[in-house]
Image (cartoon, rainbow, N blue to C red; front, side):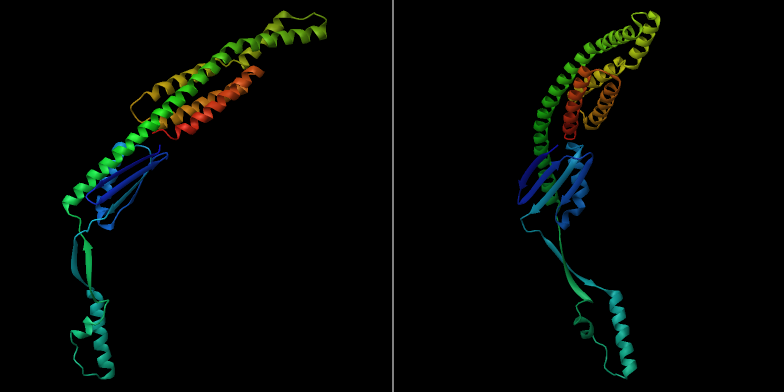
Length: 283
């Protein structure tokens, strides 16, 4: 589900975006001194977003205090000292080794600066993150309500088509029996074994019986409808229900040998595919 939230406090700007994703996928773009807060920021976002890719960016326009210090590469310094001694010995040099031999080389001793984020600034950043992710959450809720209404309408359509298939299912058996009797009469001049006809009709009726599939499909629709009113994350559950609804409809399509039912199945498949697309947006 998509969403956006922004907060600005004391020169600190936090922006958080979310897009569809099967799981919680968190990414940050923050200054180096804030990397130690990354895990804390992630946990805050997880409190409001269970499913989706979340991108959090933090920009600091105010000056950040810096610590300056010396960095001495002692290993390199030892090697350099040994090199000078070897050089003196090899070429019979008598010059004394002094401090200037080392200070004139940048790689040995350097001054480093490190930005320092104080506790007050950390607290401001956390508050800004909370505000931004709450705004994002509100936007996602608005989108979620729109999806809820749309999917509810799709489920109503599915109910109507399922009911029509329920009503059409017995007709298939009757039409088959009529066709069977007509064909037998054509070939036998009206002389046939009634028991044999009834047996053939019963076998056919058993093969095309879709009552169990329709019952399960109705159950999945009702479960989906109840899930839409849940306050808990339902995305993965809805994924599963869509798969099961599609499975039942495919079975009905394979078993039902009737043009009218086949047309209803095509409509059901189309609706299920639309629901599947929208389920990807649900947390």
